[in-house]
Image 1: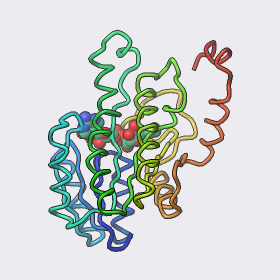
Image 2: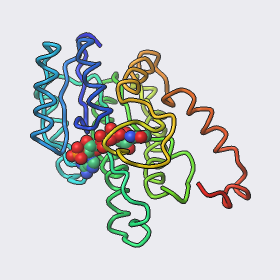
Image 3: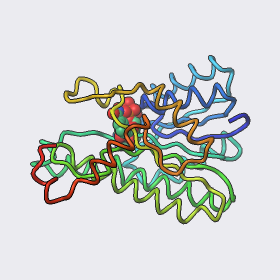
Length: 247
Ligand SMILES: NC(=O)c1ccc[n+]([C@@H]2O[C@H](COP(=O)([O-])OP(=O)(O)OC[C@H]3O[C@@H](n4cnc5c(N)ncnc54)[C@H](OP(=O)(O)O)[C@@H]3O)[C@@H](O)[C@H]2O)c1
């Protein structure tokens, strides 16, 4: 990470925050972007002081697609060049509400998928032209199979995983590494107070595993690792049986 320049989007999210700390500690210069302008400034100043790292920040709203090119330009203005991007944002939403309110469904889909696809498109074109770099997208194990308890969020994450897979297939020849991160349950604002959580990881654990996976140039990583096996089992259940399960 020493000397690398990274744009961290969704930087007030617990996972991105933990990643930003670890990247700065390892010598990266960061541009942090998040929709809460005051909070992202606090996060940036805290990291800058702790690690004596060059950190800049700006506001970013995933649903304001027209502003996304501008965010990339701002990051480039501050950092000089860009070696990588991390996108870690979204809304879990309320599945029950989404079933009767399409505006809510749309908000979940747009914040987890459409908005992320938009900013990733700008960064992908830049990195492709540059001929090197990395892109990290935080997706979810929820995107691996549709379940009645959260299929709206899951479908957006599934779409994001496919988008990242396509980018990887497109950009490998240009020397750009695209990594899909599928965390299981993580103890963050998103899951605070939710029932039915098990094997919960901390954002710091997730960030540490992402850093190792990035170094190893992994394509798709499940965090913690055992979620790979859990999801392999879940994906292997025949649909004929799966449709009767209460999951
Ligand atoms: N926690 C888990 O168990 C878990 C599991 C698998 C995957 N993930 C994924 O991990 C990523 C990070 O989430 P987290 O767990 O760290 O939760 P979090 O702390 O709640 O972070 C979610 C972030 O998304 C931002 N956000 C939501 N809608 C946005 C929009 N329209 N424009 C810009 N920013 C927006 C939020 O901004 P505000 O701070 O302004 O609200 C917040 O910073 C997400 O992609 C999430 O889906 C989480």
